[in-house]
Image 1 (tube, rainbow, N blue to C red):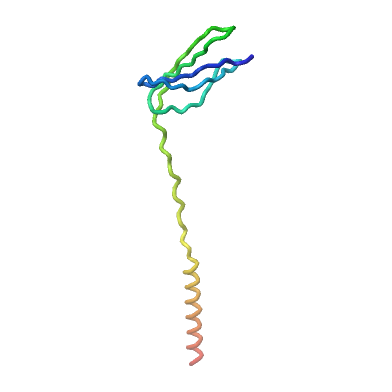
Image 2: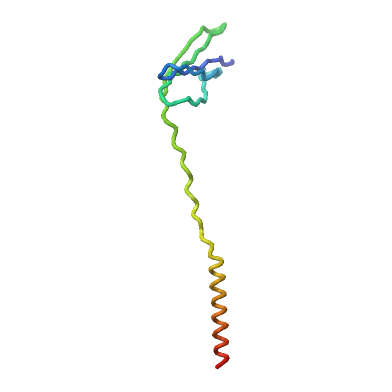
Length: 110
């Protein structure tokens, strides 16, 4: 068993026709699917048309879908900047060494 080609067409609320493409049905269930991004928001009538073949006559079916706005893209939160205390620690260590050296020199003179 093989599937059959089905033409998909969408008609927006302004009666603009959009060709979605041709898909092949599942041979077992007769279902089909197609990923499609509509050109704009609004309501679309989607029509599936089968042209027919030697074993089955032509047919069509329709449904409707409402397309809303795309979700806003969210920005990831900014990574907090951790301050670098390296030079502060080095400066404090040098100050302590100088203070100790001065204290030692003062105590030696006494």
